[in-house]
Image (cartoon, rainbow, N blue to C red; front, side):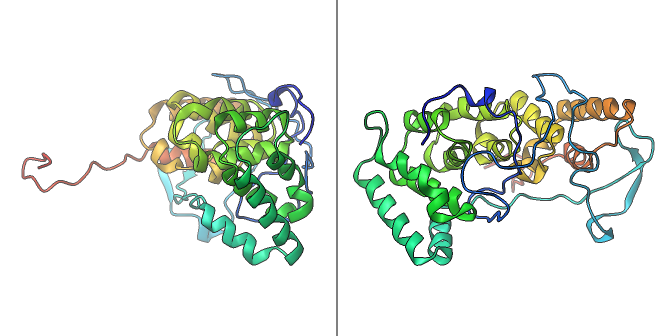
Length: 307
């Protein structure tokens, strides 16, 4: 843990490599703090789409096997060429706590495994907040060094769970911790918080340009609890900063039939085209989803009424 500091949104000017979340490895990361390549993309304010956007061509679909037949009747927003219909991609399910524990049991070396067992036992024995800093908060700070960068997120989520961290504890870790610890808090929210009480943490992360925080912030907790307005801007923020929309949990369901999101995507694409920039392929993917409509539930009643 580090000493208390200013709000993370004001501290994360240098962006990070995108994260796939706990349970998936990222061998290019170092242990703690901000270590990704610098990204000079600017944060988008609510309701605006700036031209400081993701690198051109980000998340481009590769190969003909990733494409379906070209839809000649539909033009991409702000682009006169025929737009390719992209297959719907569903985000991978969020690993359960049992999945995370199994991953660590399988991949940690004996010394790291022993350390994690001890850290989880400590957290379970002394849960919640105790004084200026709890013993389990110290273990969060050690996780990267003890378990390695590839497994630190999963270890931290398990420690937060063992400590039965509520909203107060999660908030303290988020605002006083390193970027890695804040990301672990965001990954832990779907497991530890059932209601919308932790939304301020998601909203803070969405104000940053740290792409690793952004990719964690648009996970299952945001999909469940963000308002439609805030969620649309979160999707656009991903496009601005180059976070692949594969990280946006439950994207097909929430984007389906969303005409306002389609309008916002069209405006953003038009701005990029006017500035001589290419339109990200991820934008077309999301736009295709807005044109789909979730089918109504099937009923057996002859007049369409549920029995």
